[in-house]
Image 1 (cartoon, helix red, strand yellow):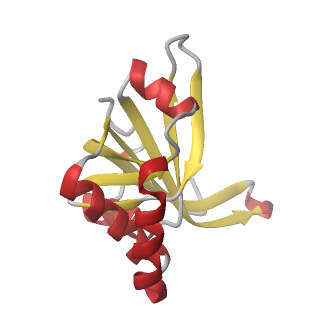
Image 2: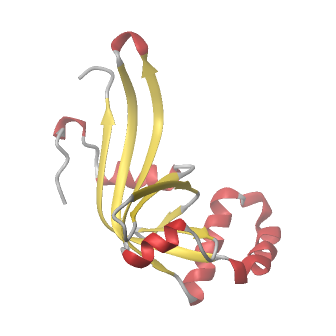
Length: 156
């Protein structure tokens, strides 16, 4: 993995993991068998150095993951455009890892963690929804191998 070029903008792993924990969505980037890159926004949860997301049983990202399980996942938070300075303040993190389908108890837990993150007031209803959608939904995890994160200040 390449190191962050601008060390002066690098943030700690703890800050990076904090952003992964509180981010509302992230961009999953994959590469297909034809070497065509593909980025797609999705909801997720970050637990135990692992990113979990759900998807349909078929689709572009799953086709790409079948041919190449290496992925990156980007979350951006706290942005502020500074027009008069021709700049933007932001904090971001990119996680690199290996994606795979989740089964068994970990699968159920992953769905519960997503439910707790996005619908904490509707846990019981959400459990019924998980059961209803179980046969038409996959849960994928990204086992994080490396994290790169930075915060861009107003001035370079």
